[in-house]
Length: 88
Image (tube, rainbow, N blue to C red; front, side, top):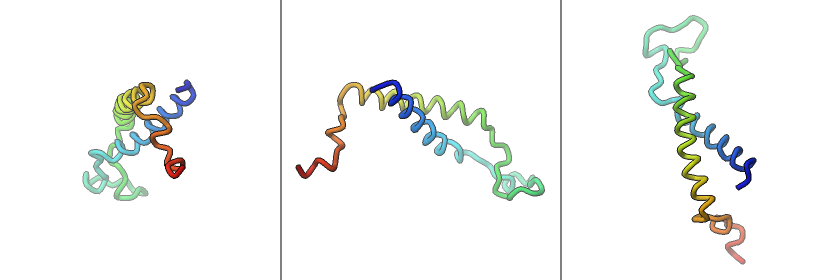
């Protein structure tokens, strides 16, 4: 795997992990009972973005290490997942 491919794979995994981490244990302003005027009631009360970004980075790094290890070891290759070539 080239460094550019590894970087793209890491960015992809990081972003997907962020989408999973963002809604976890999120409390809305309505649940807290402190709705700021001009915002929707479902807006996060305290998003804690720095904490969520750190959790995302740690989780994405672990997932990336596992996936990169599988790719580099050759356990799964492109030929194993090439469905278009299956009929030939």
